[in-house]
Amino acid sequence: AQSVTQLGSHVSVSEGALVLLRCNYSSSVPPYLFWYVQYPNQGLQLLLKYTSAATLVKGINGFEAEFKKSETSFHLTKPSAHMSDAAEYFCAVSAGGSSFNKFYFGSGTKLNVKP
Amino acid sequence: NAGVTQTPKFQVLKTGQSMTLQCAQDMNHEYMSWYRQDPGMGLRLIHYSVGAGITDQGEVPNGYNVSRSTTEDFPLRLLSAAPSQTSVYFCASSPRVGAVRFPQHFGDGTRLSIL
Image (tube, rainbow over all chains, first blue to last red; front, side, top):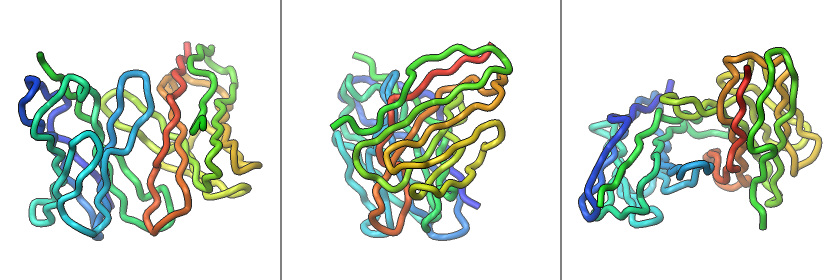
């Protein structure tokens, strides 16, 4: 079975500071991992995805994530936070294959950016 | 290019009423799915479709029906609304590309309250 745990439902950083959003997964097979962002009153947008190629994945808006198998982690980082990064971020895992019912979201982390 | 369009954006129902949430996409995507989003729980899959005439259940299908008569449309029906179905509902679509199935384009959501 697959699942994801996002540590910290709320994270607050100052503008210009490092952003680190944590995601740990459990999977019985090599996983595919994803990060999505949700701005208020909008649907989710795909930030980046890991599908067993390079372990360091670069996404949109300056975000990146590193797949660490030994730690079962896929943390999202950005070197310098911007006010526009304030949103909710979701980690997700898939065991792959042709069925959507093998895709699971974490509970989300709301990022607050202070001026 | 409209992407994924959900209607209505807001709806209030009384317990026992039925209604249909509409979802349409104009990208000729084969895969479509419905999620519900509840506070602190991330998104959970209700139903999904891998093409016209083909649907299947997700994680939380009880109380909901779907059909897919065309590639473009994937309506979600609440048969007899219950307060537990108060939630934000998202429709997503994905093209048939690659080995990994994941929701790629989301609508802006339907906010549903059941009294």
